[in-house]
Length: 115
Length: 114
Image (cartoon, rainbow over all chains, first blue to last red; front, side, top):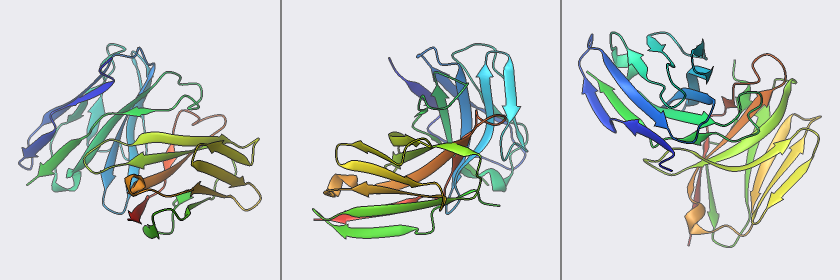
């Protein structure tokens, strides 16, 4: 199993550009989520999905879109990048959505710099 | 409004001594707590968890203590090793609506000196 994979590892964007951060897992996990980590802010939930076709907003959803057409993939879209979106983005997955007692497995992260 | 607080941004201990990382929470609906460990340039990895029906959970060198009345939990690492140097995140989840979300603290950077 590859676990949770994220691409790209690093990206530089100009303000106003769009891009998609890719996330895939091969563990047949129902639950997937996106977090951003900023210095001194910890991990903040952007969007999450409890299964294919079902998504919901987290703590900081503005400026981001997600979709979950398959169990394996959960892309995060930035429609018009802003410097405030400079961050490290982590995708995570978990077997169960009912309770997070099944731990989340995190990907290696994508470092995004918006100029 | 920060629901999970890790008030110590950093902690430095000597190898072989005990490391104690603290976490406080404000939401009384939280009933499951986890600690994650994160090395630079890697994603967080699960370390240990505890349910609110327990007050202690132990896994090797790692023990988590939960004090529900004080809304406080702590992670003890004994003995500390240089490889334990990392950022440690406390996280919590709540019963009912929102149980599918984890709320993280800001993290504590632990440095274990040889």
